[in-house]
Length: 470
Image (tube, rainbow, N blue to C red; front, top):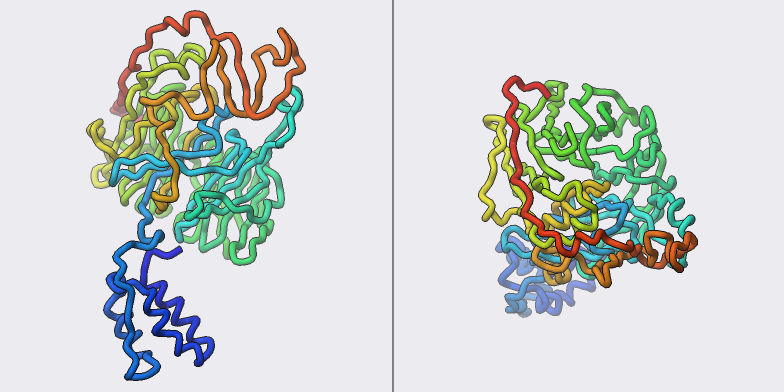
């Protein structure tokens, strides 16, 4: 898929160059080229290739853009959640330029507990995940299923669908996917030290030098010609040319939920200091040290996420909810969620500044991001050009809508995708032999849930750090 009419013309000219006889088809081809989108240089080249001076090249006068030309840079939010309350088999995509929210489909029966996604420099999307069985599982089978990633997909932008690619060599859990020089790397996961390289041109995985030690849920990013991997306080650098890993400076703390990004040749990582407190650390390869950003500024929040959009580094936070220590199901029923807070990073003076809440840079999906933040939900944001007309309706993600498409409260029960099972094990009263189909049904919410009044939750608070201690 291309975003340039010149690319369409170049493809046609390459086809013509294979056999000289094909040049006679140039006039017919030109009738499909959209004149208003062709550059002057390409038009001159086409005219110079006319089979005869008596032949006039006539172009299409259509002013409609090709689908590739309508691609708009969007934020793609991918959520891991062991309870799988996230809208099943879909992810929200947001276009800040139009303030519109869309829905990207995910593979059918994809386990939301274990999914990794990467956007390549040429704007392709790849996903590694576990595909759940289509047969019913016993309660014990479901609880013991490790749900390891092995399936691998490439996104079809025109169909809003994922197409299968070669499976990974080693099944893994919560691996990190990165792209360097056209190759995809699957790093660690499930306390593994194995690393694989995916060659997109031949759809094949190859094992490469393993990590120095096992890593569970590592955070990997690409900077210059190297791959950096963070796990705990360890930070390692991989050289593809030497196929070796070397340790660099220790971090200031374990990176939070895959929250590692590259901004102006530095690595930025979120660190959870306490249960509701986080700060951002940064690393410069030239200096070889990790330091706190914003003079150690700390953020009080239920959840936080780093985002680089339009060459600007942002921090998104979900404020601490007043019901943080209520039951998880009470949180799901909460209708008035506090809006997401947004901070912009100023590299010139190494500071974070809070943006106006009316800013449309992030979508109104604090409930989708924050619900379950205390129960092992993780969210990450990628940025890639998407085709708006190919995406689906995303109203179910918004804070003012019913909680989630595919999950609902009925008769004091919560129905979720994955299985149909009450909290006691499901088929009969107090049964322990229930079966899983496509969701979980959790029974008997607290009686107080129905009548409980909920508040908006407290504001995000920034805690200054005068001495820079982290």
